[in-house]
Every structure is written in C-alpha cells, then in structure tokens.
Length: 257
Ligand SMILES: Nc1ncnc2c1ncn2[C@@H]1O[C@H](COP(=O)(O)OP(=O)(O)OP(=O)(O)O)[C@@H](O)[C@H]1O
Ligand SMILES: [Mg+2]
Image (cartoon, rainbow, N blue to C red; front, side, top):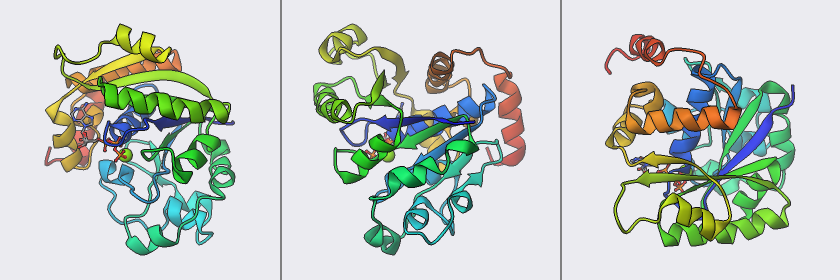
C-alpha cells in the first residue's frame, strides 16, 4: 500500500489544525476503519501528541529527522488503533532539528498506512514548506475571518508553487455570528470548496485537557459530528461502526471520563 499524504495547513496560527488532524485521524481510524498515521511536522512547536495523552516519547519525528531513531520507532499505536508520530516537547530536540530531509523521512511511512495526515505549523517558513512538499495534497483549516482567509490565500501561492493539489477548506470554530464570513463568501473569495463547518465547541478544550480527541471523548458533540461528516466526505465512505460503541470502548480505557 502507498498512503495518500494530506498536509493540514492554514497560514494563520491557532485556527485548529492540530485539533482537526487529531480528530480526523481518530474518526478515519475508528469510525471508518482506515489505516491512518498522523504525524506532527510542526517540529518546533509540537502539540499533536498532547491530544492523545502523549507527553514524553523516546522517539519522535524530531529524533527520526536527526537520524537518532528509525522511522518505525517513531510510530506509536494508540489504544484506538490510530498510529501517531509525535513531535518532541524538549527544547534540545527542537533547537537541533533540521527539516532538510523531511520529505525523504515522510516517504518512509508511506507503506505503513492508507492515509497519512501531516499536522503542519503556522506560517510559510521552511518547516511548513517541507511538510507541504512531503504531501500529495493539502487541506486548509481557517476561521471564518478575513485575517485567517488572507493567510490561506498567501499559503495558496506556496502550494501552487510546489504544485500540490488543494482539497478544500475546513471552516473551524464557527459561531454563527453576523460578522463571520459564511461558506459561500469563503468559496468566492478563495476559489476553494468549503468541505465542512466545524462549530466552536467547548468540549474541544475539555477533551484536550484529558488527552483525548473530542470525537472519542464525545462522538455526539457538535464538533465531533461535523468532523465525522468531513471524514466520510474525504474518504467517500459511510461510517462502519456505531459511535456509541466507540465511546463505550473508550470509557473502558479512560474510566475517569
Ligand atoms: N472547534 C473548536 N471549538 C473550540 N475550540 C477549538 C476548536 N478548534 C480548536 N479549538 C481550540 O483553539 C486553539 C487552537 O487550536 P489548535 O492548537 O488545534 O490550532 P493550530 O492551528 O494547530 O495552532 P498552531 O498554528 O499553533 O499549530 C486550542 O486551544 C483548541 O482547543
Ligand atoms: Mg498546531
């Protein structure tokens, strides 16, 4: 198998790339039975592992990029079956890391899954460029605001330059306020398709604080439902498992929930 590699990008920071990556990966894996790896390519400001309760891992993408571990050593299987390559949270690993070989390293994961989601950093620096270069396609995450969309457009120029396919935009943290830019305005402004509107949902932060993606924490949460629809649309599939089954299964792992 050769995995399809999707870079989750935004331009602007703090719009929900890591939340979308963690939840999309979880749902693709648990609800749609896909073999998925999520990789934290935001090597200087890693957060992806935290969404799964990973706070200290011996092998990380940082150590693989540095040649201190083999790619397969950086893959951790979560209780749910999703595979995760976390970044390092240590200053020393961040200071020394270089991304010149990221494309080559990400290629090493290709035969280990059907889908690879790359959680990217903000901006259009070397790290983000290396991650986009490593992907087949990009998926944008944006808030429904002009500042966020302007950064999408700026990043789109880089994506064009690198000749990568754009899947569309996920509008995240939608509150339904008058001042927000709606989907049809976003589509005409960016010339991209809006693939989902993920609502602002307080359960997202609550679940992160417990080290569980909201889609697993509560599949009935507003954000979870919308991300499940998005996963189905991206995969062109119907869900294969009942959500409550997954929720119950996770309550066994996390009795404190
Ligand atoms: N749908 C949502 N509802 C409520 N809060 C959300 C939602 N999506 C993301 N958040 C919150 O917004 C903040 C930023 O999310 P996240 O870290 O995923 O953004 P990011 O784009 O990955 O940031 P960075 O650019 O720094 O990597 C977090 O506190 C997260 O919990
Ligand atoms: Mg992030």
